[in-house]
Image (tube, rainbow, N blue to C red; front, top):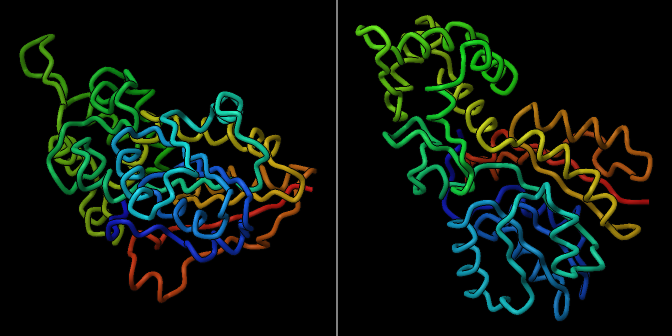
Length: 303
């Protein structure tokens, strides 16, 4: 869970270098967030170049709209609240072509962590929600209260790479049953879940540099928002949509996402990989923006 200063997009200079926006070219920001990267593109693709900004989070799109308007670019932007896994459909609906570059910044925003009240962070007591899109019927509370032990353990292991997945899943299942036979004691807040994880893991693990609840919270968030499947579905669509010589840039924040991107790039014949190794933030950027610390950028060009 990475918290950063507001409106500080990650690796902006490298995003611009890799996307290489020219005047009058069109770009898609699949994770527009508060529009930091979008504004950087709009500063370079005028006077007629446009950006299609997509985000699942309605609140984030509101902030994006404000920030774009403050910079005077609103006439060249289309904002859509949908999952980027529907990329082809969105492009068709919006009649948005040609497309010269596509960006996916898969990180959480500070607004989501600090202000959304949706339980993305274990650092404050909030409802266990974790939805990017509040129209989604699945919440983190539903997972921890109603999924069976086997499925809980599976997502903690697969999506969180959590070494104590079995212990945590068992403790969650124990904790949601009260002493009265059959009565349920629901786990409804981040603080309650944190208390359960604390009891499930050994002392030495609680003293590690990475907070011991990070992987469980990550796993639940990925499961709620179907994040890895969405990424896998989106990448081939992005390549299909791009013009010849068009570029795709993906910023990931954990090894599962990065692996998907790396494998896709290596197994796709119609692209040239522009980043032999993933680009990581400079020491200077890390000093200014702690959230950037786990970011990895990969880029490719359509042949």
